[in-house]
Image 1 (cartoon, rainbow, N blue to C red):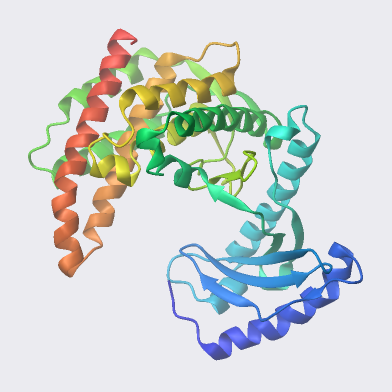
Image 2 (image 1 turned 30 degrees about the vertical axis):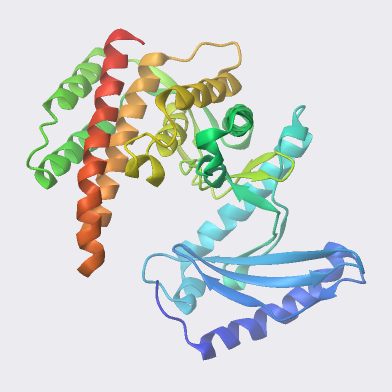
Length: 368
């Protein structure tokens, strides 16, 4: 992230604050007013401004103003960027569509939505109401997951709702495309490149067994198709949220087109490769519990319809390879004492990734 000067922030506040003051009555009624100084928080891919609001004597809200940015892009550059303008428009439109679809759905009581308030086009900013939510990852990584059966059962219930949420997103939020390649040529080449990168980064890792399976599946399914959808493409436990009463929501979708199994595989891989799982070699949440969570998720998504297990296993295989490569690339960006500690941890991570790949291939071969 690029450092932003106090002068630059003051200029943004001088534009943002009067705009929000002017719009408050439309959002919350004439008695609403700003209730304190706004705060600023830079994040990896967005700049956040928080404005506390007093709705009444008993009710307060927080308004979030979000300005997307690319890597090493300052706040001023983000505001001037045509690409960020396009992304902010798409994000606002998607938030509005998600809210419309999920509030009207028959199972609306299972889901929460983020309320989009405005888009300030001249600032490339999306304005939304903050919700009282926690990430699904924080629920997954709680120490109670080790010892408490109720915690695991609650998480299993959350995963069923997550599956339902994703199915509704795929069917109603984005564009539905009848079919596309089972394994595209571009994806096949990318996976082979990723495997080459991993073998070069780990001289002791022979991934021939993975290459063989990938090539076999590519050849077997040449000309075959899968259902394609507008994908969320960032459907991870850090981007899925749970309210205090157990409702599910997600946002920040990337709206790419591809096989629906990409989103399905990503959340499954994300949970089995989250940091606590990598550090403990998969012992934090054992394979049996993970399977129960995944089955609940798949039941939520497919209901009584069978999943294509070959496609599911293939895209989980691809997702693990992608996650492993990202881990190696992140290691290469670290320096000093932190790099030394990461190298030590990476030895454990590599063993675990290989074990996951072998499990995926075993299940692909024997269907268990």
